[in-house]
Image (tube, rainbow, N blue to C red):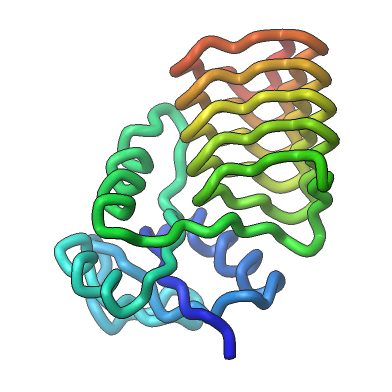
Length: 192
């Protein structure tokens, strides 16, 4: 029997997360937690089972959680939820699409989701609570800090370092050895 997981946040990013979780087939989605949606309403095929105020009781029932709130300019909301979940004793598993490749020599931090067609190469290190979005590439020896969102089709070349709480836009290319400071926003199609 599969373990159950609750998803925090029921917007567009949640839709993509649901697809990855269903494809991975490791967890059964118990429901969605979203304070802005009516309890009992649906997000795709899954019921909204509560809001933020219900998290303490939900975590006692379902120990696994995934943050499905998106991140564009600021990681603040995702960090707040991450810290709340950790304080409640939740487990934040790494979710990896079976259509992704993660080297056995790479390290991925808790609460990170690796979306479809992502490639994480040898000795790459990815922090906690990150979004590695569809078709993004992390070459050898890359470091991505905590609470980052690397968007669709971004390329992080070998030895590059992305600081904590960063957003890297779609189709961005970071050339080998580049460092991106904490709290940076690299726009769509950026080249560094």
